[in-house]
Length: 613
Ligand code: AGP
Image (cartoon, rainbow, N blue to C red; front, side, top):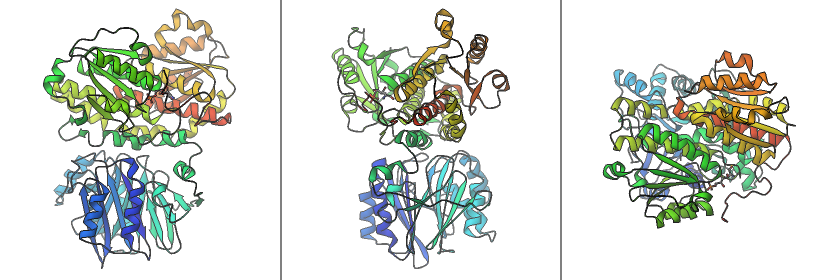
């Protein structure tokens, strides 16, 4: 997963950047690179593979200078090879850029730039950024203004760092949305830039965080921050403790809050390397899935626990809808005891963040005994659930510390979507047009997640109104029925408020009796194929005096006119709507628990990894 480190000051930039990148290695990456201003021109070293390969390159061909930027890349557009590794230079060789995120409109921008005579040297989306900066610099604009103009062309969420040999006294960094943070570290006569604090903490504790749509002009003597509209920003300097845990938490109060906010970035990483937007195809090489094997599958059993189980429920809808393969969903602790009927070509897919959950592992063993092919979706590389599977998909979220799972819920949703598209493609179940549409929809996911995160303050306001409730009902239908389960699970596990997720259509068969003014009802009603049914659910709850908190698509005035509170969602393709719909629910649970003063990251009676049956 991408990491960025930059330095400007009197010291040799190379070792500082390489050490910083080392501190970000835990995030996972597939190539690395470095650009340093050496004797007034920019020198780049980059290669596929691990940082040790880059270090060897630098040893063979040293680089010395006082300004530089480095990057570890997790491929999104273009293979993980040296040519696609960052940093990327422009045509003049005077400007260089590193980037985290996905340029959603890169095909359009590439065409536009190609028509202006730009020659591209990589398959990445990132390269358009450096050419745009050069375009504006050639119009006699300085680096900062040129970068600002360039960034205003980008759609999506980004962390960008750029410098130019024409203005060796500065580095320009910017953040758009939530695809990655940008932190500036203030030293004595030297300044650091990074995507994550651990990269620079050994040098300084004084840091400035960029908010979305802000840019920093970084010099040896400090930083100037402005918005992408050009307005100056009065920033706050934070003093960070050396405590590595606190450092990891950054500006967030709890890991859970940090991890919720990491989702735009973890979703970028989830897509990274797996999606070829040009071909409109998905690659999941660790599954070792051939077209013949895909065609023989008669049935898939998904098995998991808790939050991972809710992801599995969404996966069932996706695989059945997209790949037309029947899917059975089992809570892992039930699977092994129900003597499931598994045929020889069936697949059992286990989902587990930790990869060490005893019930899930037991279910996998049972499946193995019955001769199934075993797949897993895991977050922890090297975990048991990964090792015993015949093929796996890794979640790419980075470590999840908070006991309440958040980013390790949205990542497998996207993994399952990609799996469904891949299966459908290998089985010839999709037209090319349909496949391309489904693949293309993935491009917007990190930014859509970021837009939910931008509404945190609104969610916190709603949380204040629910602080003292004792019960809460969550209703969803279709692909968002599991969202209701997951929202309720989040609330109960960290706030200790009794919460139940329910399929909305079941209300009339009993639970509707519970509704009165003391029972808030969270209704998940985005514009998906179940919208009208959910709308009438809101009316029914209102008619019985219930307080309704509706999750609705931005601009839905019908819902805002009847619900007591609305948590707005960006318009999301419905098969990906569980990814965005869950984010306000995670934030809601988080803020209720935080406002109640509870131990959000380590709720009572719970463990991160449940290794007992
Ligand atoms: C979620 O917030 C939980 N803490 C819990 O339900 C968790 O998802 C479950 O224990 C499964 O864990 P796993 O993904 O590590 O297998």
